[in-house]
Length: 169
Image 1 (cartoon, rainbow, N blue to C red):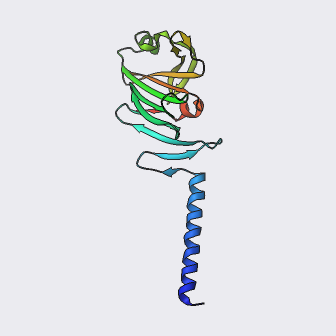
Image 2 (tube, rainbow, N blue to C red):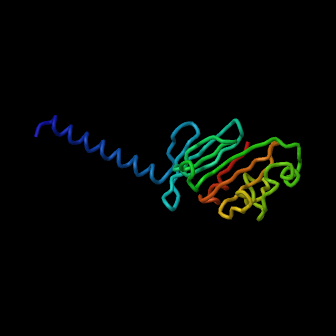
Image 3 (tube, rainbow, N blue to C red):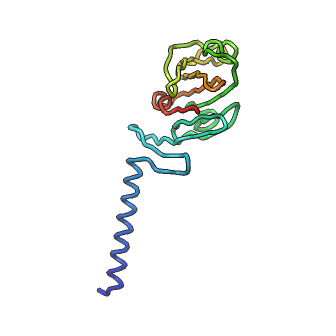
């Protein structure tokens, strides 16, 4: 065997080892996609991506099978008419309390099922309505920060993981 052939075989082997190492490390850790996007895997195999929007001052993780589409605010869906989604709405409020802000907003028809925190800020959990019927598999987290009422909603995704990833700045 010639030296040239040995070098080619060794080089090919090293390239293969490097590719396998990169794939395995990406599968088990965060992988940078850009300045503000990271991929992470969940226990069920879902790949989550970090989203950041400086215009409305929010960031959160979402399943990468959802795509951004704009309506009012920011929305993520698998496709138009698909069941799983995330939406973010922000409106200015002069109110100092969450309850007062809700009375003067589109959320005043929602029923509330409890409290939690979003980014260490008190949040009310609401159950939205579709026409006159309550939607039980969807939750909206309402938060006040920096003079804005945020409506942060999701349906048919891991709500706990989503809620814990939200940061408002």
